[in-house]
Amino acid sequence: MDRTLFRGAKIWDGSGAAAYPADVLVEGSRIKTIARTPGALAAEGATVIEARGRTLMPGLVEGHAHISFGGAVNDSDLGNIPPEEHLLLTMRNAKTLLDHGFTSAYSAATSKLRLDVVIRNEVNAGRLPGPRIRAASPEITVTGGLGDERKNHMYYESFGMIADGPEEIARAVRLCCREGVDNIKINISGDDLGPLTHGGLTVMREAEVQMAVDVARDFGKKINCHARSAESVKRAVRCGVDVIYHCESADEEAIDMLESVKDRIFVGPAIGIIYGTLYQGEPFGFYRDSDLGRNMQRVIETTASVYKELRRRGVRILIGGDYGFAQSPQGENARDLKHFVDLLDFSPTEALQCGTKIGGEVMGLANELGQVKEGYIADLLLVDGDPLQDLDILVHERNLHVIMKDGALYKDHSAIGTAQRAAAAE
Ligand SMILES: [Zn+2]
Image 1 (tube, rainbow, N blue to C red):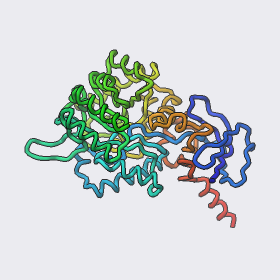
Image 2 (spheres, protein in one colour; image 1 turned 30 degrees about the vertical axis):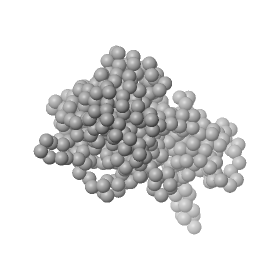
Image 3 (cartoon, rainbow, N blue to C red; image 1 turned 90 degrees about the vertical axis):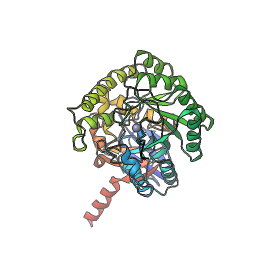
Image 4 (cartoon, rainbow, N blue to C red; image 1 turned 135 degrees about the horizontal axis):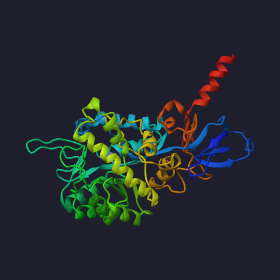
């Protein structure tokens, strides 16, 4: 069995406790032993990594992944990509996520039905680099909803899978289940970035939402939703949706309802895309001094007040900011951590737990993933610098000294250093 010994690390374990110095032994795919006495663990047969005080922390979990999204300005850009190129794009994005320390990805939605599924299978088979993936369906949406770009005189592909009425919804969900997804996605509200229905509109009927949830349950799947309006959040809670994204217009009643099911659900603000549209959107035609810009500013403010309350009430919150659009590129996903601190008033520890411990829970691996603990899956990052002092450290690939997934060293910069030192000594 492969063994790796991290010696002299500072462990940030994800539990919420302060970081502490320790050595960590990984055996096979699991964390075997954590020793607080330096040098106490035998190194025989193990690859030894001298951490030199670097921070050892859990691998990051992207809680709102769109692995098949890349560079889109308009939603229909994703529909324009032919399937062959789209598969290659998704494959590259999976590697990009892992290169940036995301060892797990809970997919919020795919943009063509089998993209997440195929990449998940290839990664699991060890044939492609990528995070562990919970594969999603496309965004199941009603006519005129987010992800429907068709015109009356012209068919047009986007990222949505259009279904109207409970029967069509049932068929769409069953189709996605048959093709192997882990999570179903439904769009209950509209969206301000979509061309037709704004975020304040609740366009998927309760009977449609309920049917989607019931059929997903029949097949043993989780279900995610897009819910910006207060009513869409309430509809999601009433019908039993598992992961409720956005929620920035949740009113007091909606917040109470979310709290009442906090042990069952997860929420995620997806703040990265809002920030990106506001501050990095100009090259793509998103101007701050416009109705859209003012809307994005309002969304940041309402998100801050809603999530402050949700955090206080113990609702489980995920990072993941809709990365994969032109103004929120793949690879920058860890920026959400800093957004949580700067825009939503989280402490650095709270933000980092959203991207590790709570991420492990949404992956369906509570008590196994997302913390540095004995017996847990060895998804680990050895980081140059202290992320709690500056979360921006985690955004840059160069600061990730070692990336380990499932106990296997995916990136080991310390080995490169050793080889270079040996070469220099010769
Ligand atoms: Zn999304």
